Amino acid sequence: MISATVRERLRERFLAKAKAVFERSLEQGIAQGMDLAQIEVVVGELKGELSSVWLECIVEAHVQDQTGPGSCCERCGREMR
Image (cartoon, rainbow, N blue to C red; front, side, top):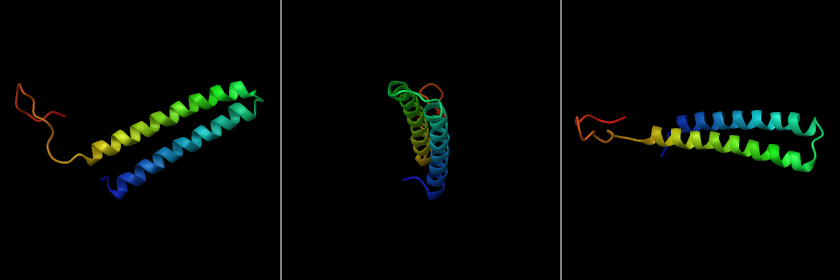
């Protein structure tokens, strides 16, 4: 389980990105008078951006949650990072 501090940092990071994406989508779509097909393209791109940020947050949370030493290198015997 991730700590409250890590959770809050990830939440803030994701929400900041979501807000930026939302604002940009309004500027690109509504302000420029796009038709529905063009708006769908923009929304698809924005969805991809948010998915990437969410994936980064989940990976970071997973890394932060890891406890104990990592696997050892078969060749030298030291911990791998």
